[in-house]
Length: 429
Image (tube, rainbow, N blue to C red; front, side, top):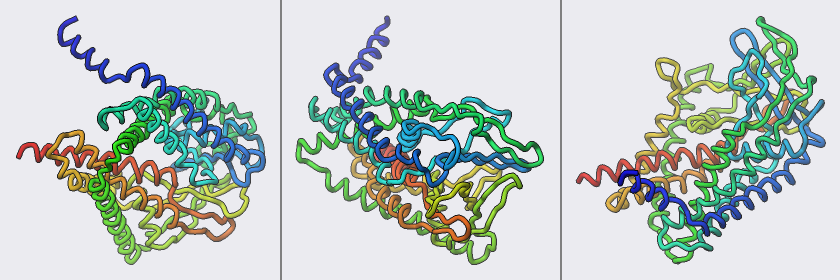
């Protein structure tokens, strides 16, 4: 092997944790995943015995044909451990897949009934923060970056149970659980086949990205706690700048919603319900303020969810929102203004750290999430609307999306990019 090869191999070995850290990471990670699933099973598994709404829904509608499926409240249902596993994996951001496909084998828009307890969304993150903290505390670290690396070792113990849950929760639905096709192309039922959370997405998102991200933060916090040295100035800048950035983006979007509502009769939502007779859309006016708030979360990739006020057999299939802006080829550009705004905010926060090193600038830029996340969660919980008519439901932003996408993924990613830009510009001066 050449000298360059030996140097590269040495760098890889230095980047890997030692055996003691790996051991603690396996114990902490596996404990976090097991406890998280057990808690989810205790809270959500009981819903299978007497569901008051469909546990799983599928809906897709094209130009001249559509498909619908409701699993529950009547008919065959998955086992409690399968439904709990679906809930546990989807609150990490993993999605459903079908393993026996019909000729209409496009990506499937499944909707899993949201958790009855919204706080369940935070369980995996809190457990992984604690796991990363414990690993870094037990193994020690001389600097915050080493502590973060040791905290991320929980990723050695977290994936096995995640993959086992994804594989073990696949549900081979009986033939009576069938897709209903309607429209001019084809009509009638087709067995759904086998469904579940995809093992590969679950392994990547829930098994690796999630524990690495939250475990490293837990390790970083453990180091700061051990030194009793909190970067209060940096935290304050991140909180204030992140909150202001959210308020600016939210305010602009809500303002545009009011402007559109004043001049556009079509600026309204539509509740979509489908059946053998085809698709039926009912106009639904949540008001310009709520519409603007939902649109703002939609800019981050967030969706809406329905929590039914009373028991239903066939619920609302979809909520159709008008588009704020699109590219000339139909490509949705909703995320661009938010990305630019967050990058600028990250650059502003990272200005002081930019004179130090790139790594510090990245962390500084990402701290805008400290102010962005709380407002994302509050608006998702508070800005809701209850429908009237035959089906009464509380409509609001999907809380998992508000946490993972609006509150974390966007501000951390684009804030960090802003930090990099600030560091590069300052380094040239």
